[in-house]
Image (cartoon, rainbow, N blue to C red; front, side, top):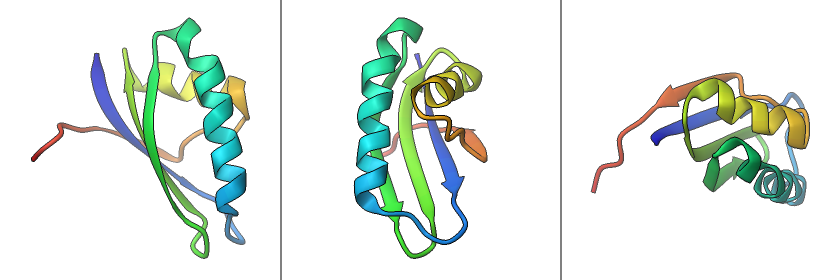
Length: 83
């Protein structure tokens, strides 16, 4: 499976608790699509959310977001993990 980092921007900021709830919704939805949301990062004041996900492709990763909570990514990048 490929590894992707997605980026969301929400005008007016975002609460970490709301992002945590959305992530839980992703986890509850991901299995049926063969996706694995691994981690996420939040900048509350800037309204930025970044998600690291294993997925067959970027569109399938976004499908999980769309179905789970409706907040699709603004950008999705194929990434390779470094050490």
